[in-house]
Image (tube, rainbow, N blue to C red; front, side, top):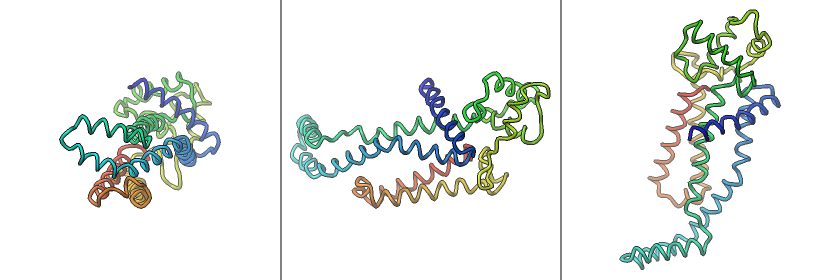
Length: 250
């Protein structure tokens, strides 16, 4: 699984680098990256919606089968599979977008954590030297996955780890602006830091709520759900979006 995630991080890193080179703006490159991934996944999303419509159409017949073969589970399974084949419904297709989105999100997080490697495309040996400077010289060993963001923060503050070496790379890093509309995208939202950062979790929660409202009115499967299920789904998605945006960089 880690091999797959690493491969995705490298692949998504190329896409992010292209978006940044096209826009020369970190915030806009993230927005463009989001649009690109949505366009790539659109055919699959469309296929899933068609599959959902087929499920709604066959549901009345499926309910009749469940009543007719209530005491014969084997026969019910055979008839159910025949019904699926008749309507060309694939019960596993509905979970495929979610299964794809999880590694994509994990891969994107890996790209966001390492802008020196995947956005600025710095050589690996330079990144290794900078990390060594951070951990061995400055004794900052608790940065973890955020070490590249910490390096950028320190260099922007005026520190220079190599006065006589890799000046081009240091200059590129110092010129790398991670702010977007006044928000430092390299920082993680916190009550103890810039209050403006808290706009990100707020916007994430609002966007998740708007998505749920739209799905409840347009998605055929959501329309078929009961009120309680819709509320539970909405609350979960909002809570997940807010929590996730509070633990990763803006």
